[in-house]
Amino acid sequence: MVIKPLGTEKAVGDASIAEARLVRLVNTGSSEVVTVANATPASFTLIANTSIIVEKEIGAAIGATAAVKATIVAFTN
Image (cartoon, rainbow, N blue to C red):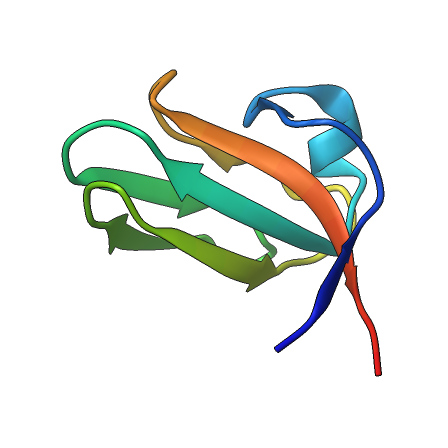
């Protein structure tokens, strides 16, 4: 999968992250529970030293500790 970064890495609680549809999360610490505040809230465990792309609702905040960083991304062909 190829992704296109659309900004700089930020804390997951940043307002611009909440306004994004696709976000790459990277966990630089130990395993973390990440919560996405969609209309139906969801959570998952992001294991240590891994990253994942999350598609979420626009306006949905993401909750995690400071060890989890976020970058707004887009898919490319």
